[in-house]
Amino acid sequence: MAAQQRRRGRQDRRAARSGGTLSAPYTIRRTGLVSLIDDESIAIIERNADRILDEIGMDFRGDPETLELFRKHGARVDGERVRFDPGWCRDKIRTAPSVFTQAARNPARSVQIGGAAQVYAPSFGPPFVHDMENGRRYATLEDFHNITKLHYGLGAVNHSGGVVVEPVDVPVPLRHLEMARAHLTLSDKPFMGAVTAPERARDTIEMCKIAMGADFVDNNCVLYSVVNTNAPLVMDETMLWALKEYARAGQCTVVSPFVLGGAMSPVSVAATLAQVLAEVLASVALIQLIRPGAPAAFGTFFSPISLKTGAPTFGTPEGTQFQMCAKTLADRLGLPFHSVGALTASKVPDAQAGYESQAQLMGAALAGVNFIIHATGCLEGLLTTGYEKIVMDADRCAAMQRFVGGVDFSEAAQAMEAFREVEPGGHFLGAQHTQDNFESAFWMGDMSDNRTYEQWAAEGADWQHQRAAKRVKQILENYQPPAMDDSIRAALDDYIARRSREIEGGRT
Image (cartoon, rainbow, N blue to C red; front, side, top):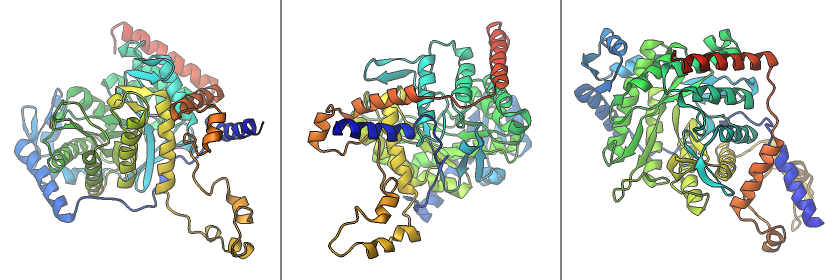
C-alpha cells in the first residue's frame, strides 16, 4: 500500500507538469558564458572570413533578382559568384535586431530570441521514429501529431519546432500544410516555418495570418525558419527563395551553415569557423538588403566526420569547442545565436545516447546558445526521433535550465530564520523554511530514479527507457488541446482544402 501511495504521488506530480500546463516560456541565463576564443583568435577568424568573401566569394544560385540586388549595393557579381569587400557585409547587417520576440498564438508562450534568453526546441527533420514497443519505422502524420502533443505537454520544451518528423504518408507537396495545421491547432507554442519551396513558405505565413490575424503577422515575428547554406559557400535556389519570402514578410530567418567537418569544411575548428562566419555574413547581409530590420540569427550545425568511416560523430569535444567559439562571433555581430543540442549517433535510448546528448546539450547551455534546436528526441544522427528519447532529453533540458538560471541569493534563500529555529546538532527537515520550499528547493527530474534498490525492485525494476515509455503514454493520455475559436479552425481547414486542390491540380 505504501509503495502504491508513493507511486500515485509521483504520478500526480508528473501529471501537474504535463498536459500543456504553463511554465516559464523561456530561460534567462544568469551564468557567465564559456568561450574558447581570445581576442587574437577572433581577429584571425574575422580576417580569414573577410578574405574568403573577398578572394573566393559565395555562390547564390538560381535567382537573378538576388544577384542584381547585390550588384546594386556594391558587391562584385560574376555569374552566380558574389564577392564582397572586407567590412561590406558587416556594415549591411547592422540593421538586424540583436534581440526580438517570436510571438506565439498564446501570448503567454511567446519567446525572446537573443540577449540572455535560451529557448529549447525539438529535433528537426527525421524521416523515422522509434519507440521501445514498435522499434524503428517510417514516421506518419499520426506520429507528427503525437510528437507535437508530447512537446506541448513538456514544460522544459519552449518551442513546438518545425518538421519534428517527416510524415511520409502525406504527399510531399501537401506535407507543409498538415504540419503547420498541427502546430497551430495541437499546440499554442511558437513554431517554425517551411523552407522547402517559396510557395510553402507563403502558405505557412498565410496560415499564421488566419490563426493570429493578418495585421498582427504583418507587424510581428511569428515564424522562426532555418535556412541552411550548402557548404562550402553555396546558397542554393530552394533555400534562397525561402529566405526571400520570410525576409520580405518580416519573419525570422536563421542562416545555419550545415557542415560536416572534414567533408564540407577543412579538418580544423579554426578553418570551419572562418568558413561558417563568411557564409552567415553574406546571407544575413542579403536579408537586410531585402528588408532592413528583418529579424535574423547566426546559426550553426557542425558535426565532425569520422575520418575512418566518413560517418558524422556527435558529442565530440570539437563540436562543443566550435559552439563556444561561434557564439562569441555571433555576439560580435549583434546577432542571436542558434545551434544544436542533444545530438547522438545512437540508434536507441541507451547509455551512448545519454552521454553524447548530455555532452552536446551541456556545451550549448554553457556557451549561451540562444535557440537550442535538436534539444529533444534525436537518435541515429537525426535520422530518427525517439518517443522515449524526447521525454528523457526534456528532463535534461529542465536540469540545464535550472543550472543556467543561476543561484538564488535572495533574503528568503539565505534562510537565517532556519538557523535560529534549528539548534546546533539538529536537522532542518522539519524547519519552516524547508516546509515552505520543499517542492522547489532542489531540482527533481522525472526520469532519474533515486529510490533504494529494494523500492525500485518492488515497484517493477524499470530501466529508464521503460519509465520513459510510461511517461510518454501518460502525457498523451492527459493531453488537452489548447483553445481555438471554431471559426479560426474552420478557416484553416478551408485554406488547406483549397490549397490542396490547387497543388494537386498543378498550380502553386
